[in-house]
Length: 292
Image (tube, rainbow, N blue to C red; front, side, top):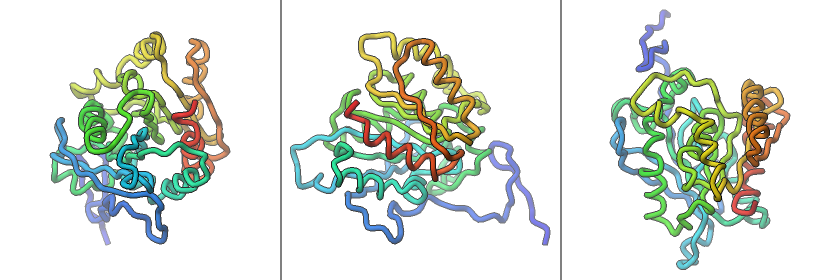
């Protein structure tokens, strides 16, 4: 049988009859999470779909403690991912439940948004899967530029958060790590903890009005991020020993060391993958945020 080919919105060849995967429900089959899981559909203020979805994980006693406020950890997916990737592949519920129950992590709110770029509601299609090349070429700063406005401020309005820099963390894997670096650099007064797991550092995306403003001048932005009297509370770089992003992550670590920017650099035994990498890196960072 001959399969028909079509071009995706970014010019990557795909099979016309290949299955389209969607983010799916915020639950993991076969695992009963201890915390409270909620879905939030929110309006978008930049070009793309009119609404997106994020998954919010609350501490088990959230609604039993009406006066208690919590820090927030924003956890991002990478290319070929969406808002349920950490749930389905990253053991995020299992890790969080275990560390909270053992007193190894601070009680917190965990937010997993969809940070892919989509052209419109039809392209979004309830948060469809985007292949790696499509994701890479569409990291253009559009959805990222509205993240604080559309996601962070909304979370602060819906939940009992501690709405300040000292109680906000952002981290992600691969492209999500790249986005996290710039979230911290563009908004040094918003995020006190920044984590990058094998950050994708090879910028190849298309030019847009948002791209230059959001993704430009990282070193200049880091000087401002670290130059004042309120630098990051914690800054964590992680990478696998056999990771394709090992050289670029080490280069960033070396640059930050030369500049005297406090940070932690950790190398795990795996590659650019979940096992022996992102899963364990998230577990490590979860135990350190809001403590360091």
